[in-house]
Image (cartoon, rainbow over all chains, first blue to last red; front, side):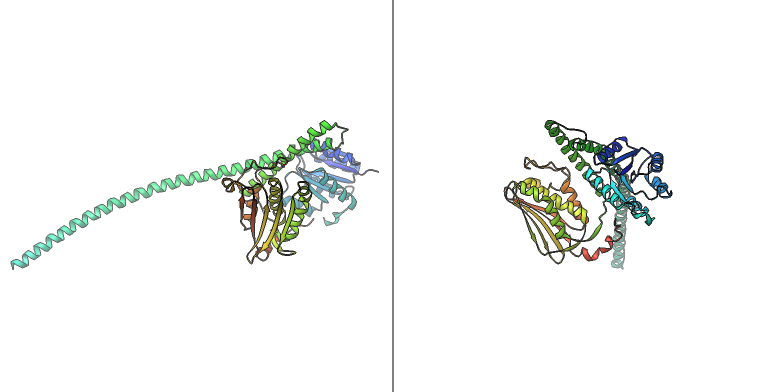
Length: 130
Length: 302
């Protein structure tokens, strides 16, 4: 059975591209364009992994992450953050929060797939760090 | 008696004369001093103007840096979208494509990659100029680092029929450097050497003196014109004598390499003879491995 991945990004083009790349690699993909739908779909669909853009209007990736981890039904879902504005501070904060991964835009497809594979194999990883 | 009076008269006259001269000198001095005061004031006015101009220039420079920074960031997202779209079509994710279509999409991809490198380089340069380019120094085996870069270039060198030689002073050599940016310097120098060398070899050497670690990339390429030697480390300097098959550069690589070496406290220079080859050399402080280990702390691991 294919693993289900929820991809969250406010840029439709990026969202479409990540989705099609993952689908081509036999993942089932669901998408959300903002934080609200991200949380809703995480609850309703119970994905195996969430790929989450940090910078989004109306509830950025960080607050979505906090919300997911504070909720019993979603706290165990691994999360990979993506951002176009990588800097040390964000990276450190993300790691401190206990996210499973971090990739920077512009990403390349191999890096993305490698990270997804790595995190999915580990399954429910560093959640206890929180 | 007469003699005495005459003497006094004479003395008086001389006294008056002296006084007159003194007064004249004092007047002159006063005039001069007044002139100096005026000059001083004028200098102060000029200085204030200079200060103002300087501040304006600094503001402009900051604006320029911010502009490049923002522009580069804004350019990255659309570039990602374009690049990934083309890659997906080339990878056959969206159906079969003809060889003709493949050829032209490959051309697109090549130049999108080049554009991406330029944007990345510009971003780095704006960071360097703004003093925001931070080195993450840690004790690193520079020999191992060079070997890795060589492994990366081996297939390319083989394809071009060029020999990659090494000349290391020891099996391993610890230096306190920022790994990623130092890889970039070697990547750049070796990449350039491959680009400008049609036959022969490229030698990468690492030697050590008590104070410095010296790294060189020597090629048997076309060499650099004497007039160009001074400019190779400038921005957007590209030289036309690259091989035909060469991947186009951004013209920023050597400028960034120079900055990286200098941020490490080293120096970079080039020697070249036309039709014989070029030698790029840079130094790194050998004692940096002791002095600056502190900087390596706080490295978060994944």
